[in-house]
Length: 379
Image 1 (spheres, one colour):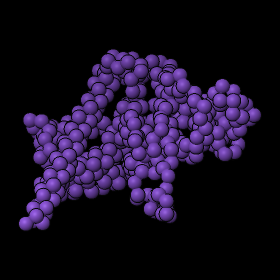
Image 2 (cartoon, rainbow, N blue to C red):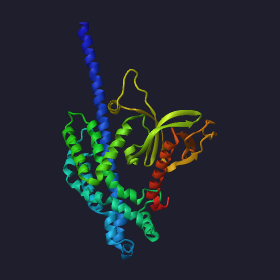
Image 3 (tube, rainbow, N blue to C red):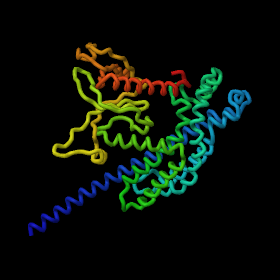
Image 4 (cartoon, helix red, strand yellow):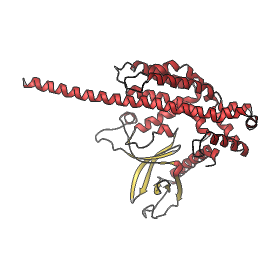
């Protein structure tokens, strides 16, 4: 009799654990639903700003049109108003499907399936995007045109420290590439018995196909997916997700980091807009790891810190230098990094002069690219 009771107790305990897991899964699903809806609202708001602050004002007066020719106007903004029209409808349908407010039982996959053909509107915009950026860089070199565009931004209610025009023009490409990532996360958080599971699964494949069919977005989608995978391999990640502020990994490698009297080996990752450093996780003793097992066995790194490159200053260190920042340790093939936001310094040392130069070149290139994008505001 006691054996029967023990088995029943075990089943009850397992049932309680299963119920808790299910509840957690549904809570996480609700978080993803909210993220999809809220970020869609932000996106439509940004597109509407572009339309009202730039397109409508430029069309309103002949004086404005003298700053931009009809051809330049078309290149810069392409078919962004058509994209806005699609996404106003898309947001309205999303909103209707999640009334009165998002709940874990709500279904969303069918909305993406309904709009997948209309998302082909991105083809024209994405194919034109590089040409638009080149034109904008040229226009920003003309003082009165640059002032005119800045004036439109300020009239629209944006401050000079807000996202530059280049950022708004990039947002459609970032958004269409983000949908597969959001749907992948939604599918992960959707129980297989949920009524929405088949539709979300189909919607994920459909949105991947949409992105792949838009030639100019394919490379960007692959880069975002690579960033997502990389972040998943970093245990204890802190701060904004990589895919929200970065578009690509520029360089990674092992460096010695000297700070607060400690000398530690760290793995550094340089992205556009961000520098991240981590501790490499120790391998489990007795197990050999291959490149393949490393890629599928979970986190490989432990998060240790990050610096937005906008507040990062770099200072070369001559070989043989030993000072306060290096804790009087003699530096070779090194440089200093200053986090101006926190007024903190640390020293990096590469394995040799060639590796040091590679890092300094990459940091300089990232800075030049970022400053070029911010040139619109003269930052």
